[in-house]
Length: 320
Image (cartoon, rainbow, N blue to C red):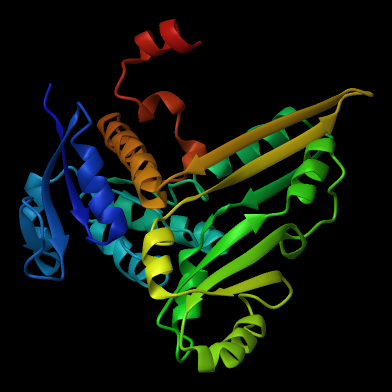
């Protein structure tokens, strides 16, 4: 059986993780990386992203490893004209619009695009639906962390005088236990999460920088915020990883009996797990096209067996 010919668009942390992990897939081969840069530190063939169309006949599947702020919304529909695509778009409120745009582009080309894969959106999305469907009378809460927030860390680094910085999102242990008991109704994300900052900056700037952090709208205002100033050596030795994770907790009552459904992720390296999800849903995109489908799909619309390289009959025998 021929392998799925895959290529990567974008070569940041996520693209590098996809490149690293795709070699573990028995049914895929990496044929190239499309980038705006002429040279990359990789042995994989590198092509100019502006010339993607020239390689249409050589690629079955494109892993779109681009940013959600502008790159995916602006560029992803164009890539759907050349091959099946899978992205990790993470602007939750905008996913319905993104799905519609990608559906039109992919359907016109006879391709399949799976959108918003990863862990949230992605695996957490699936588990929110499962939990709510199983327990009609339910409470449901999503907790993020403990883990590094790339967006909030970037916001810290934009403050004048900050040399290096990271921000960790920490869920409240008290709120977690309340959610497990079904007693967290009405609690908001700001009430259930703490923002922990580690910053390298000149000592003379500490007071001003801390004030800017605590008063930064849309990022820190309203949260419990902890600001720690550390030296560069400590930062480099303790804060250069990318851990993350979280919980989806659904509780419900069935006539006096309490039930808890909890899905937990603990990730040593966020980009690697996100890439793992993207690769699995990329396989599904290719299989859906092979079955005659076209258009855009979210993770909620993809049957689980399509994610696995193991044949369906073997999965049924092993896992059902």
